Length: 370
Image 1 (cartoon, rainbow, N blue to C red):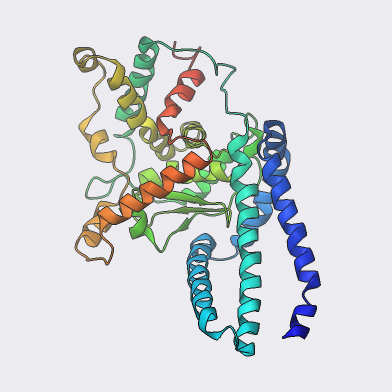
Image 2 (cartoon, rainbow, N blue to C red):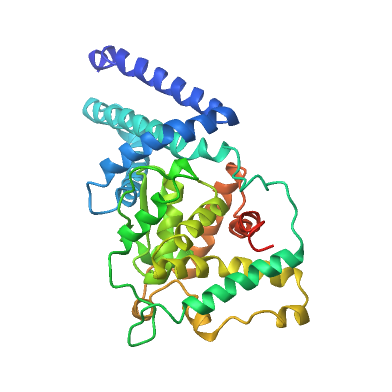
């Protein structure tokens, strides 16, 4: 036992250095100029390298890592409990020490990845479109934007391909269309240049459905993951949204805005419709909140087909899972998911600000629509 402890000097030297590196990076992550420099000039290379590595696997590495982390924590707790009774057993102590040292390295690596792939990004300068970041917009301008989006949705909904149940479907390779659309924005938004990994459907899609999530960015694996239940129409704007995170746009409103631009500026009609309908709820709801009932009723009406299309899930898949019974109730998943998300956003000083995309779109269309 004593000999074992004599040989651990290098390990603890490594841990001390590792902790210092993580601490320094977390302090730098509070300094906006550093965060901007890192995101613009370093993060892209790091993101591409890491996502190429995880892209070798057909399954979601992030989903695997989360499962592995949960199992590792459980095993660590079991070891700690057993240590109370078996701490005098040399063989057990040797195994215990090796596992806990490995677990410590695992935890520090998780913190490092979270810092490099998330914390730094949350302290970048916020996106300002065409220099209009501080400009205030009137209800009339919001009305013009709202009616424009509704009109586009109404027009595109009758042009896309549909199946026998009138669901909007895409028969080609939508992943390649999405990657091309994102890359095409790189001249205006340089962060979007470079490699894009293929999206991965998640095995735990039902838990995402229970939690009200359709896509997720895993900082630990640098992948684009989405629900297996997504329909073709919402798949496009969802994947663009998650790819935006992968390119450094970590805030939800900014990712929504980038996804919108990628979709509507694409030369693919189906993806264009996906972009317009992806922001319809946000803008329509924001306008409803400030316009009176009578004024709202006078605006361009959303067509019935658009209303039917404005649901992100594959209807057949949802019917199937509704017939099944699961161990954890929907209400429990929603409750704990919301609690985790709120705590996560509060820690980073961010709000669940999806509707802020309205402000970015008002800035974008300034001088175009009004």
